[in-house]
Picture 1: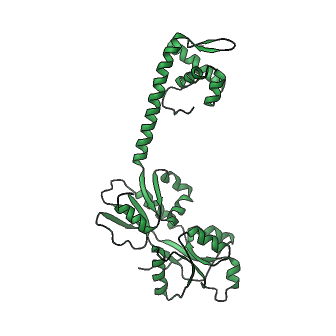
Picture 2: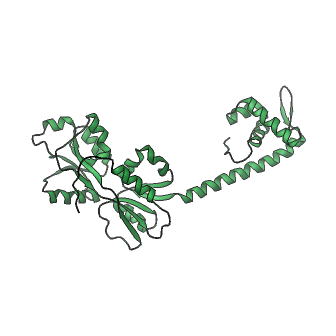
Picture 3: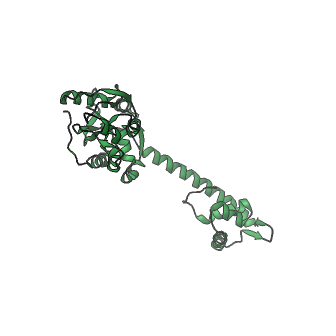
Length: 295
């Protein structure tokens, strides 16, 4: 039987002994030692000035005074449980609902320093278009998206954060076999995605002739395909940094690239999200190579 820690622990122990008619079984139920149960009951008896149990070799039974205290203990436990539920409900209502694109969610969940903040948020992981729609419908309070936000209603604020660095990577085997030592088999993002549209414009501006051979909405899948020598993937640097350092993946010769990250919020939202934007900025800035951005 599970209890929270609001009420006097002696009444919890007393209730379990009365319910199970055994000090040893009460100790097992509560995960306590039997001496701890005995001491708690003795302390409660001294504070009330009455005996609560009649003990013999085989049975533990309530005294008339114990029966009276049991009725009060039941009420205390009920009130304690109700208080706990109300506190949980209040905490739930205070949690902030945030939509985050998958790569930024990956970045946050992979960092221990983000765990406390994430515990205060209800996270919806989705693409930028769906996050913008959810925000406009008031289903979330803020979003972390990519691409230049467009077609936003006037009640939505936009703040540009640090850019997310991207690199082309492939397996060491593929790079050693490549004649051009460049990108000729791009494992691309889904063509309908904001990210694909953004980088397609970047490639045309830079004069890069890069042809996709496979499309996916999952960055994890693209990474796995690159690791298994099935093509070259353009991925966030933070997702492949450890694989590059360990030699599982290698960077392909190409301009260093990045995509902008934006924080979008409802203007009527009173909750501050500076802690989230500052953390994302700090994590995104944790890279060393130069990047090429559009706009």
